[in-house]
Image (cartoon, rainbow, N blue to C red; front, side):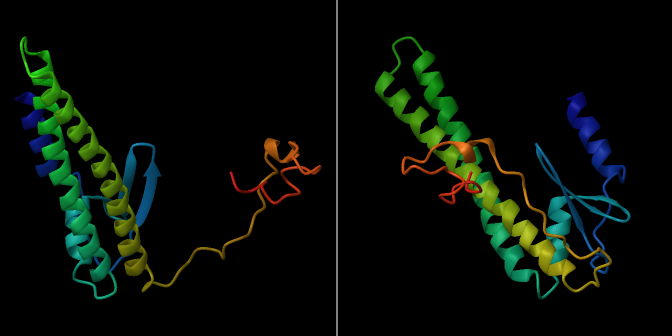
Length: 173
C-alpha cells in the first residue's frame, strides 16, 4: 500500500514534464528501456505519444504505436493469467497435469508475443519522434562515418582457403 501511495505521489508531484510539441524530443537508450526527454525534463510516454498524435507527420507512427502498445498490454495480462493458472494447476495435488502444462505453454507463448510487440511499440515511438524532430533545424554536427575494427573472427579460415574477412563475413556478426 505504501509503495502505491509513493508512486502516486511521485506521479502527481510533477517530476515528469509535460510534452511541448514546439520543441524536439531526445531519446536515451538504457539496458532497461528508453527515456524520453525535452529541455524541461523527462517525459511520460503516454503523454508524449498523445501530444505527438496532434502532429500530422507523427500521427501514422503514433497510431501504429497505440496498436502495439495495447496489444502488448493485453498479451501481458492474458499471458500472466494463463501462466499463473497453469502453474497453480500443476502445483495443486491431483490437478490436471496435461491442462496445466498446456496453459503454461500458452502463457509462455503470449509472453513471447508480448516481447515482440513491445519491441515494435518502441520502434514506432522512435519513428514518431524522428518524424516530429524532422521539422526542427538540426544544430548537431554532420554525421561522421567511422570504420569499426576488424573483429577477431575475420582471421578464421572460411573453408575455401581464405579467411572470413576476405569472404566478406567480417562485418556481418
